[in-house]
Length: 225
Image 1 (tube, one colour):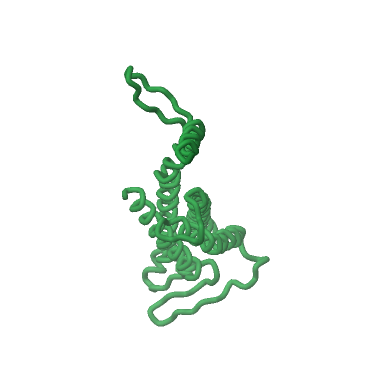
Image 2 (image 1 turned 135 degrees about the vertical axis):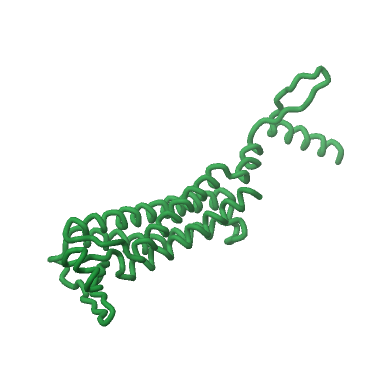
């Protein structure tokens, strides 16, 4: 039961983190910038907000955004963060599908436990890659923005990306730990091994399952005759 709870918790955390990464990618409040000095910006109550897709001017009487359409003239950190976040959003779809198929309550046809185990391992690995892409983007973007112009504070979208990446990272660890310690694979491994029976002398003697099956079959034939 503990393994199932661990897998359900990991799947829920991964899904919530993936949704957070999608929200962070779609919104533009990543960092708050200031074109003047900090004192001037505070006095004027005017800040700039920058995201992956647009730059905005925020003030009590104005909210205006300019879309970043010129790809070739954009800084390298914006283009790289865009690519990583888009890859994370797209890669999260098959990752969530594989994690869902690996759950014990979902069964597709004559699926064996080994197939579910492989689904869980691949889904956990993809979720881990999604978390890495989100972490690299959300850490690199504010560093690049601060190097280019003055950085006032972090935006809500950046915090959402951090939380989403952390949840995906936690969920991937929980899923991979569940798959690495799956109790359903133990009975299957024991079926093909030798088992021991207690003899009269008290020693444990290995008995081959194949030999036992042949002897049982011969006794059945003798009984029929």
